[in-house]
Image 1 (cartoon, rainbow, N blue to C red):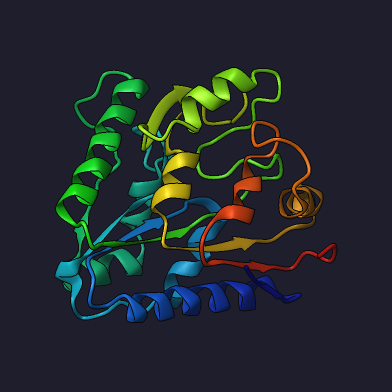
Image 2 (image 1 turned 135 degrees about the vertical axis):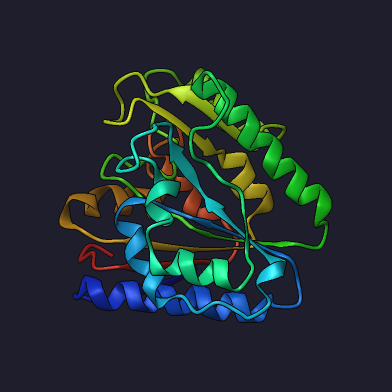
Amino acid sequence: MKIVDREEAVDLASYAGKEITLLLKEFKEFPILLLLSGGSSMKILPHIKLSTKGSRMTISMLDERWSKDPTENNFSQLMETSFYKNSTRLGCQYIDTRVGIEKTVEEAGEIYNGSLYRWIKDNPDGKIIANVGMGSDGHIAGIMPFPDNPEYFEKAFNDDKIFAIGYNTKGKSQFLYRFSVTLSFMKNHFDATVSLIIGKEKELMLQKALSGQGKLSEVPAGIFRTLPRFSLFTNSSLL
């Protein structure tokens, strides 16, 4: 685990973007799946420099807010960035997570699950790089904590056969319907993870996650401790 602690959030976004750039260079001879986070983690995008071998790179979102509203949908927001325009020019491929023909969020999750299965099957030597943020409640990607229902949490997010799932967060998020990669997918298939976590409101939960306090159903970000090549960029004063 690598932790970079700086006071200025802007600098941290730059460092995180440069870290992803270094990973892309390191894995340039392999097919790459780059999974991006929405929200404040998009500050990283201007600092990522892509390889000219765009045809060997696939880009998608780590999780998605299942909404037709482009101001809510992560992939729609990604499409408005210069990073997306540059990646398109270089010939990168995409797993598009906008609302399509699916009729329910569960179906959207099944479609995304199938897309991840196909990518791994088609690219047995591929490398997966992920940008993973964290909410003040300890959620990562679209995986909300379920301290009141650990059985459901294990079934939904920690089954090795499930790469992604769509579900109703039941009020645990302002975005009711989400689909997301699972903890088991992160644990079994991520090759490198870069995390940008800023803000005083996240400090206590980040400390819990890195020190192993609580079960994953209580602090999903606790998975950080077991992810390979995990790099954290934070302005937390508690670490």
